[in-house]
Amino acid sequence: MVKLELHDLNIWFGAVQALKAVNLEIQANEILSVIGPSNSGKTTFLRMLDRLNELQPNFKMTGVVELERQDIRAIDIEELRRRIGMVFALPLPLPLSILENVAYGVRMHGERRKNKLEARAEEALKQAYLWDEVKDRLDESAFKLSGGQQQRLCIARALAVGPEVILFDEPCSGLDPISTAKVEDAMLELKKKYTIVLVTNNVKQAARVGDRTAFFLSGELVEMDKTEKIFTAPADARTDGYIRGKFG
Image (cartoon, rainbow, N blue to C red; front, side, top):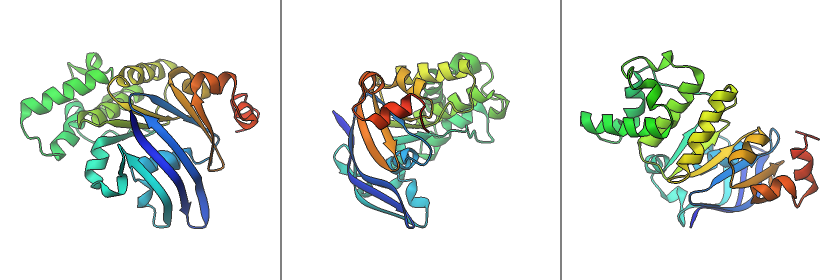
């Protein structure tokens, strides 16, 4: 099933065009890895799925982005961001306890029953591969967690509100290899229930977890295909050059 679709998407920030006539489909329950050098448009693409680009005063777009055949601009912004969660490069825990960090979004959506909040938080922490490490310290400040644990806490916070899609923007950029492996393990398990879009500068990570991979360059979607094909027999020489480290 097609979960997200982009039709002839163009984005400008002032006079600078960040995305150029992008057309693609994202399937339900897949991990789409998005790669490309700096200023290729991959983060702009990711933020467009959650309408975060609209926060920029000089933002302009043409084209359509659809979630299950519905234009995302026709969806209430709070509802859209419940259905499409975002995990950023730097973990941003709230100045609250571990439990309250995860329950925060659920509470904001109207749930007040303590047992329901705790159950939702526990489930999300388990999905983020963090429960066993924090189950005996849920009342401690989230700032006492390590960087890798804080990132998985942010994943749990996104999961707790019941999204359909999870966007990852360089989620492992500041993490050690062990923490990175735990985040990747969580992604591979999460795709059974969610659709995942991963922007990463780590081509090895893209190859490890992506079902399909999209390569962006200078605002254009150069090519998108099954990850194995992109990394072994790309259709475009520019893709091959980037993967081999010849530029970027």
